[in-house]
Amino acid sequence: MFFILMSLTASSQTTKPYTNGSLWQVSFVQVKPGMGNAYLKNLSENWAKAMKQAKTDGLIMDFKVLNGESATKDDWNLMLMIQIKNHAALDGLDDKMEIIRNKMMGDEDAQMKAAISRNDLRQLFGAKLTQELIFK
Image (cartoon, rainbow, N blue to C red; front, side, top):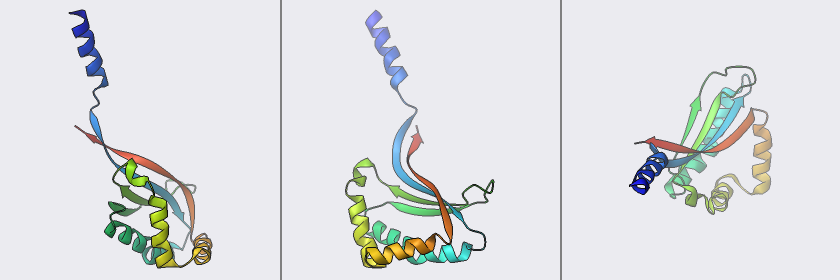
């Protein structure tokens, strides 16, 4: 009887009230003052096109851009989000995305020039790989 009670107690303690959902790669950006439209145009012409192709190719599930007011002068105001099915989908993803970028944005030198010019429009505040939790 003791072992049955201990087993029930242990299993109830390990039962999570959620299941793991998809992954979200989240990047936090602060668009420089007066550069909002220029940066959004850049995103639309480059990042969004690459994400659409990645979604069509089944590499990602979805992508989103969220805009919000900065809480302080040292806060982000734009969040770029890429939804990925699971951790296994990350295997080889960088190489597959590089192929898309090379087709759409040119060789590594062209991409580097574009990246440097984006620095005039925004500041990156970091990125995180997060996992969605779906409550039962």
